[in-house]
Length: 83
Image 1 (tube, rainbow, N blue to C red):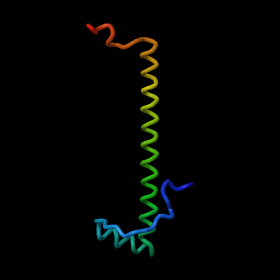
Image 2 (image 1 turned 60 degrees about the vertical axis):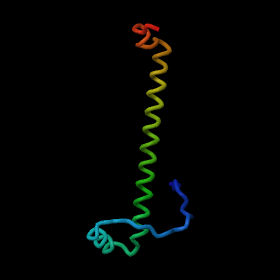
Image 3 (image 1 turned 180 degrees about the vertical axis):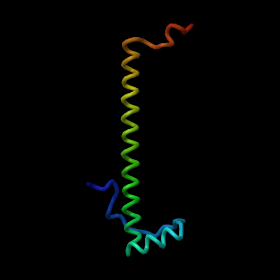
Image 4 (image 1 turned 90 degrees about the vertical axis):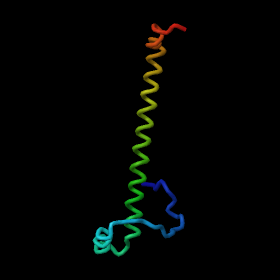
């Protein structure tokens, strides 16, 4: 799977506030905590991107369906409008 971000971008230090006990336990499991966090963050970013795309597709389909209904049957407000 192709990454949705540049894997060649330079790395830089960032400040995070994390639970000290959790970080200690994670360090017991890996020698490269930065890499593990980067992999997890990339997964989160991709998941959120997919969720937003799915939501946008759902909204587009809903709008298209409503516009089609309106074209075929007219607006509900037409029979009540005084304009």
